[in-house]
Image (cartoon, rainbow, N blue to C red; front, side, top):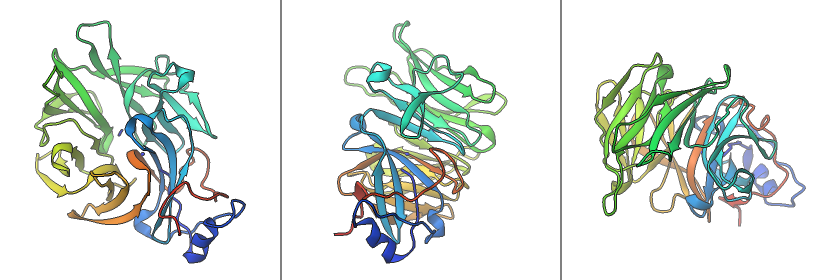
Length: 328
Protein backbone atom coordinates (compact mmCIF):
# COMPACT_ATOMS: atom_id res chain seq x y z
CA UNK A 1 0.00 0.00 0.00
CA UNK A 2 -0.04 1.82 -0.83
CA UNK A 3 -0.26 2.83 -1.82
CA UNK A 4 -6.99 6.42 -1.14
CA UNK A 5 -12.38 8.06 -0.77
CA UNK A 6 -15.49 5.96 0.24
CA UNK A 7 -18.03 4.89 -2.39
CA UNK A 8 -21.78 4.74 -2.09
CA UNK A 9 -24.04 4.21 -5.05
CA UNK A 10 -27.43 5.87 -4.80
CA UNK A 11 -30.52 5.07 -6.73
CA UNK A 12 -31.82 7.39 -9.43
CA UNK A 13 -31.77 11.12 -9.99
CA UNK A 14 -34.20 11.62 -7.13
CA UNK A 15 -31.53 10.54 -4.67
CA UNK A 16 -29.02 12.85 -6.35
CA UNK A 17 -31.44 15.77 -6.03
CA UNK A 18 -31.89 14.97 -2.34
CA UNK A 19 -28.15 15.39 -1.72
CA UNK A 20 -28.27 18.92 -3.07
CA UNK A 21 -31.07 20.02 -0.77
CA UNK A 22 -30.99 20.89 2.89
CA UNK A 23 -28.31 19.44 5.15
CA UNK A 24 -30.96 17.50 7.03
CA UNK A 25 -31.85 15.33 4.04
CA UNK A 26 -30.51 11.78 3.87
CA UNK A 27 -29.10 9.90 0.86
CA UNK A 28 -30.26 6.31 0.45
CA UNK A 29 -27.91 3.85 -1.23
CA UNK A 30 -28.40 1.19 -3.89
CA UNK A 31 -25.69 0.16 -6.40
CA UNK A 32 -26.21 1.41 -9.96
CA UNK A 33 -22.91 0.41 -11.63
CA UNK A 34 -21.54 -3.05 -10.67
CA UNK A 35 -18.06 -1.99 -11.80
CA UNK A 36 -18.02 0.59 -9.01
CA UNK A 37 -19.14 -1.79 -6.29
CA UNK A 38 -17.25 -1.35 -3.04
CA UNK A 39 -16.23 1.26 -0.50
CA UNK A 40 -13.67 3.95 -1.27
CA UNK A 41 -11.42 6.18 0.84
CA UNK A 42 -8.89 8.76 -0.29
CA UNK A 43 -6.32 11.25 0.86
CA UNK A 44 -7.07 14.35 -1.17
CA UNK A 45 -6.76 18.12 -1.10
CA UNK A 46 -5.27 21.09 -2.88
CA UNK A 47 -1.81 19.46 -2.65
CA UNK A 48 -0.24 16.28 -1.29
CA UNK A 49 1.30 18.33 1.54
CA UNK A 50 -2.11 19.57 2.71
CA UNK A 51 -4.25 16.46 2.18
CA UNK A 52 -7.16 15.28 4.32
CA UNK A 53 -9.13 12.06 4.51
CA UNK A 54 -12.21 11.92 2.28
CA UNK A 55 -15.12 9.63 1.61
CA UNK A 56 -16.49 9.49 -1.91
CA UNK A 57 -19.78 8.15 -3.20
CA UNK A 58 -20.98 7.52 -6.73
CA UNK A 59 -24.54 8.59 -7.48
CA UNK A 60 -26.05 7.81 -10.90
CA UNK A 61 -22.80 8.68 -12.68
CA UNK A 62 -21.90 11.52 -10.30
CA UNK A 63 -19.05 11.53 -7.80
CA UNK A 64 -19.87 12.94 -4.35
CA UNK A 65 -16.95 13.72 -2.04
CA UNK A 66 -17.19 14.10 1.76
CA UNK A 67 -14.37 15.46 3.91
CA UNK A 68 -13.74 13.43 7.08
CA UNK A 69 -10.80 15.36 8.61
CA UNK A 70 -9.68 18.98 8.63
CA UNK A 71 -6.06 18.85 9.79
CA UNK A 72 -4.52 18.84 6.28
CA UNK A 73 -1.90 16.43 7.64
CA UNK A 74 -3.01 13.01 6.31
CA UNK A 75 -0.46 11.33 4.05
CA UNK A 76 -0.69 7.68 3.07
CA UNK A 77 -3.74 5.49 3.46
CA UNK A 78 -4.42 1.75 3.51
CA UNK A 79 -7.29 -0.45 4.53
CA UNK A 80 -8.63 -3.94 5.06
CA UNK A 81 -12.05 -5.39 5.85
CA UNK A 82 -12.16 -4.05 9.39
CA UNK A 83 -9.68 -1.16 9.62
CA UNK A 84 -8.64 2.03 7.86
CA UNK A 85 -5.01 2.91 8.53
CA UNK A 86 -3.31 6.21 7.67
CA UNK A 87 -0.08 8.11 8.15
CA UNK A 88 -1.05 11.12 10.24
CA UNK A 89 1.27 14.08 10.88
CA UNK A 90 -0.85 16.50 12.89
CA UNK A 91 0.17 18.27 16.10
CA UNK A 92 -0.92 15.36 18.34
CA UNK A 93 1.93 13.24 16.94
CA UNK A 94 4.53 15.99 16.72
CA UNK A 95 3.97 16.81 13.04
CA UNK A 96 5.81 13.60 12.09
CA UNK A 97 4.35 10.87 9.84
CA UNK A 98 2.84 8.32 12.23
CA UNK A 99 0.97 5.11 11.40
CA UNK A 100 -2.47 5.26 13.04
CA UNK A 101 -5.98 3.87 12.65
CA UNK A 102 -8.93 6.10 11.77
CA UNK A 103 -12.44 5.32 13.01
CA UNK A 104 -15.47 7.25 14.26
CA UNK A 105 -13.91 10.51 13.15
CA UNK A 106 -10.72 10.16 15.21
CA UNK A 107 -7.14 8.91 14.89
CA UNK A 108 -5.96 6.23 17.31
CA UNK A 109 -2.78 4.21 17.88
CA UNK A 110 -2.38 0.84 16.14
CA UNK A 111 -2.52 -1.68 19.00
CA UNK A 112 0.80 -3.48 19.42
CA UNK A 113 2.80 -1.20 17.09
CA UNK A 114 5.46 0.11 19.47
CA UNK A 115 7.30 2.32 16.96
CA UNK A 116 4.63 3.86 14.67
CA UNK A 117 6.79 6.49 12.97
CA UNK A 118 6.78 5.78 9.25
CA UNK A 119 5.49 6.58 5.78
CA UNK A 120 4.70 4.95 2.40
CA UNK A 121 1.90 2.89 3.91
CA UNK A 122 0.08 -0.15 2.49
CA UNK A 123 -2.32 -2.64 4.09
CA UNK A 124 -3.02 -6.18 2.90
CA UNK A 125 -6.39 -7.98 2.80
CA UNK A 126 -5.41 -9.77 6.04
CA UNK A 127 -4.82 -6.34 7.71
CA UNK A 128 -1.02 -6.68 7.83
CA UNK A 129 0.69 -3.31 7.43
CA UNK A 130 3.88 -2.39 5.59
CA UNK A 131 5.55 1.01 5.83
CA UNK A 132 8.95 2.63 5.42
CA UNK A 133 10.88 3.66 8.53
CA UNK A 134 13.78 6.09 8.14
CA UNK A 135 16.79 5.58 10.41
CA UNK A 136 18.43 8.99 10.82
CA UNK A 137 21.23 7.64 13.03
CA UNK A 138 23.19 6.54 9.94
CA UNK A 139 24.98 8.76 7.43
CA UNK A 140 23.25 8.95 5.04
CA UNK A 141 19.93 7.95 6.67
CA UNK A 142 18.75 4.41 5.91
CA UNK A 143 15.34 3.19 4.76
CA UNK A 144 13.81 0.05 6.28
CA UNK A 145 10.68 -1.72 5.01
CA UNK A 146 8.72 -2.82 8.10
CA UNK A 147 5.94 -5.42 8.27
CA UNK A 148 3.51 -5.27 11.20
CA UNK A 149 1.13 -8.17 11.87
CA UNK A 150 -1.77 -6.98 14.07
CA UNK A 151 -2.95 -10.55 14.70
CA UNK A 152 0.35 -11.35 16.41
CA UNK A 153 1.29 -7.84 17.52
CA UNK A 154 4.73 -8.28 15.98
CA UNK A 155 6.94 -6.16 13.71
CA UNK A 156 9.77 -7.34 11.49
CA UNK A 157 12.16 -5.76 9.05
CA UNK A 158 11.42 -7.14 5.58
CA UNK A 159 14.03 -5.36 3.52
CA UNK A 160 16.76 -2.72 3.75
CA UNK A 161 18.41 -1.47 0.56
CA UNK A 162 22.17 -1.41 0.21
CA UNK A 163 24.43 1.65 0.56
CA UNK A 164 23.41 4.54 -1.66
CA UNK A 165 19.87 3.19 -2.14
CA UNK A 166 16.40 4.35 -1.06
CA UNK A 167 12.96 2.77 -1.04
CA UNK A 168 9.89 4.06 -2.86
CA UNK A 169 6.27 2.92 -2.87
CA UNK A 170 5.33 -0.63 -1.82
CA UNK A 171 2.21 -2.80 -1.90
CA UNK A 172 0.90 -6.27 -1.16
CA UNK A 173 0.32 -8.61 -4.10
CA UNK A 174 -1.20 -12.03 -4.79
CA UNK A 175 -0.34 -14.81 -2.36
CA UNK A 176 1.03 -12.45 0.28
CA UNK A 177 3.92 -11.25 -1.89
CA UNK A 178 5.14 -7.67 -1.49
CA UNK A 179 6.68 -5.37 -4.09
CA UNK A 180 8.75 -2.28 -3.30
CA UNK A 181 10.52 0.19 -5.58
CA UNK A 182 14.27 0.64 -5.02
CA UNK A 183 16.41 3.45 -6.40
CA UNK A 184 19.55 5.50 -6.02
CA UNK A 185 19.86 7.99 -3.19
CA UNK A 186 19.13 11.54 -4.44
CA UNK A 187 21.89 14.14 -4.47
CA UNK A 188 21.91 17.81 -5.43
CA UNK A 189 20.89 18.05 -9.06
CA UNK A 190 20.44 14.29 -9.35
CA UNK A 191 17.03 12.88 -8.33
CA UNK A 192 16.46 9.24 -7.48
CA UNK A 193 16.73 6.83 -10.39
CA UNK A 194 14.78 3.60 -10.02
CA UNK A 195 17.06 0.61 -10.56
CA UNK A 196 14.69 -2.24 -9.73
CA UNK A 197 11.57 -3.54 -8.05
CA UNK A 198 12.17 -5.90 -5.15
CA UNK A 199 9.69 -8.77 -4.74
CA UNK A 200 9.51 -10.26 -1.25
CA UNK A 201 7.91 -13.72 -1.15
CA UNK A 202 5.40 -14.79 1.48
CA UNK A 203 8.06 -16.96 3.13
CA UNK A 204 10.78 -14.34 2.97
CA UNK A 205 12.84 -14.99 -0.24
CA UNK A 206 13.63 -11.86 -2.24
CA UNK A 207 14.33 -11.17 -5.90
CA UNK A 208 14.76 -7.99 -7.93
CA UNK A 209 13.12 -7.47 -11.31
CA UNK A 210 13.81 -4.78 -13.88
CA UNK A 211 11.67 -1.67 -13.64
CA UNK A 212 9.96 -0.18 -16.71
CA UNK A 213 9.99 3.28 -15.07
CA UNK A 214 13.05 5.32 -14.08
CA UNK A 215 11.54 7.85 -11.66
CA UNK A 216 9.81 7.32 -8.32
CA UNK A 217 6.03 7.03 -8.47
CA UNK A 218 3.13 5.09 -7.03
CA UNK A 219 2.86 1.29 -7.08
CA UNK A 220 -0.45 -0.60 -6.90
CA UNK A 221 -0.68 -4.41 -6.93
CA UNK A 222 -3.46 -6.05 -4.90
CA UNK A 223 -4.88 -9.31 -6.30
CA UNK A 224 -4.11 -8.49 -9.91
CA UNK A 225 -1.21 -10.17 -11.69
CA UNK A 226 -0.31 -6.68 -12.90
CA UNK A 227 1.76 -4.25 -10.85
CA UNK A 228 0.52 -0.79 -11.83
CA UNK A 229 3.23 1.89 -11.74
CA UNK A 230 2.91 5.62 -12.31
CA UNK A 231 5.42 6.91 -14.83
CA UNK A 232 5.41 10.51 -13.63
CA UNK A 233 7.69 11.91 -16.32
CA UNK A 234 5.64 10.47 -19.19
CA UNK A 235 2.14 10.90 -17.67
CA UNK A 236 1.16 7.26 -17.99
CA UNK A 237 0.49 4.04 -16.10
CA UNK A 238 2.80 1.10 -16.83
CA UNK A 239 1.48 -2.40 -16.10
CA UNK A 240 4.19 -4.94 -15.19
CA UNK A 241 3.79 -8.71 -14.86
CA UNK A 242 6.12 -9.62 -11.99
CA UNK A 243 6.45 -13.22 -13.18
CA UNK A 244 7.17 -12.74 -16.89
CA UNK A 245 8.48 -9.17 -17.02
CA UNK A 246 5.94 -8.32 -19.73
CA UNK A 247 4.55 -4.82 -19.56
CA UNK A 248 2.08 -2.52 -21.28
CA UNK A 249 1.08 1.10 -20.84
CA UNK A 250 -1.96 3.36 -20.56
CA UNK A 251 -1.29 6.95 -21.51
CA UNK A 252 -2.89 9.90 -19.74
CA UNK A 253 -3.63 8.26 -16.37
CA UNK A 254 -1.98 7.49 -13.01
CA UNK A 255 -2.98 4.42 -10.93
CA UNK A 256 -4.81 4.85 -7.59
CA UNK A 257 -6.10 1.44 -6.43
CA UNK A 258 -7.12 -1.99 -7.71
CA UNK A 259 -10.61 -3.26 -6.93
CA UNK A 260 -10.83 -5.91 -4.18
CA UNK A 261 -10.98 -8.70 -6.79
CA UNK A 262 -8.13 -7.28 -8.88
CA UNK A 263 -10.31 -6.91 -11.98
CA UNK A 264 -10.47 -3.11 -12.24
CA UNK A 265 -8.12 -0.23 -11.48
CA UNK A 266 -9.14 3.25 -10.34
CA UNK A 267 -7.11 6.00 -11.98
CA UNK A 268 -6.66 9.75 -11.91
CA UNK A 269 -5.50 12.27 -14.50
CA UNK A 270 -1.87 13.45 -14.25
CA UNK A 271 -2.59 17.14 -14.95
CA UNK A 272 -4.94 17.99 -12.06
CA UNK A 273 -5.62 14.66 -10.29
CA UNK A 274 -9.29 15.75 -10.12
CA UNK A 275 -10.74 13.20 -12.57
CA UNK A 276 -11.35 9.55 -11.69
CA UNK A 277 -11.14 6.90 -14.38
CA UNK A 278 -11.63 3.14 -14.46
CA UNK A 279 -9.79 0.51 -16.49
CA UNK A 280 -10.71 -3.16 -16.76
CA UNK A 281 -7.99 -5.81 -16.43
CA UNK A 282 -9.23 -7.41 -19.67
CA UNK A 283 -8.47 -4.23 -21.63
CA UNK A 284 -5.63 -2.27 -20.07
CA UNK A 285 -5.36 0.07 -23.06
CA UNK A 286 -8.67 1.87 -22.50
CA UNK A 287 -10.15 3.77 -19.53
CA UNK A 288 -13.47 5.51 -18.95
CA UNK A 289 -14.19 8.56 -16.79
CA UNK A 290 -16.34 7.86 -13.71
CA UNK A 291 -16.22 11.17 -11.81
CA UNK A 292 -14.74 14.62 -11.32
CA UNK A 293 -14.07 17.05 -8.51
CA UNK A 294 -13.98 20.84 -8.76
CA UNK A 295 -11.23 21.74 -6.29
CA UNK A 296 -9.89 18.55 -4.71
CA UNK A 297 -7.02 16.40 -6.06
CA UNK A 298 -6.54 12.70 -5.27
CA UNK A 299 -3.21 11.43 -3.92
CA UNK A 300 -3.74 8.04 -2.24
CA UNK A 301 -6.72 5.73 -2.49
CA UNK A 302 -8.26 2.58 -1.02
CA UNK A 303 -10.93 0.38 -2.61
CA UNK A 304 -12.56 -2.00 -0.11
CA UNK A 305 -15.35 -4.59 -0.48
CA UNK A 306 -19.00 -3.59 -0.07
CA UNK A 307 -19.24 -5.32 3.30
CA UNK A 308 -16.10 -3.74 4.78
CA UNK A 309 -16.69 -2.33 8.26
CA UNK A 310 -13.69 0.05 8.25
CA UNK A 311 -14.87 3.34 9.85
CA UNK A 312 -18.21 1.62 10.49
CA UNK A 313 -20.83 0.12 8.17
CA UNK A 314 -21.89 2.05 5.06
CA UNK A 315 -24.53 4.62 5.91
CA UNK A 316 -26.36 7.48 4.30
CA UNK A 317 -24.75 10.87 4.89
CA UNK A 318 -27.24 13.57 5.94
CA UNK A 319 -25.29 16.51 4.50
CA UNK A 320 -24.31 18.13 1.24
CA UNK A 321 -21.12 16.81 -0.41
CA UNK A 322 -18.00 18.94 -0.04
CA UNK A 323 -16.90 18.40 -3.65
CA UNK A 324 -17.46 16.21 -6.69
CA UNK A 325 -19.91 16.32 -9.59
CA UNK A 326 -22.21 18.57 -7.61
CA UNK A 327 -25.57 19.54 -9.09
CA UNK A 328 -25.76 23.18 -10.10
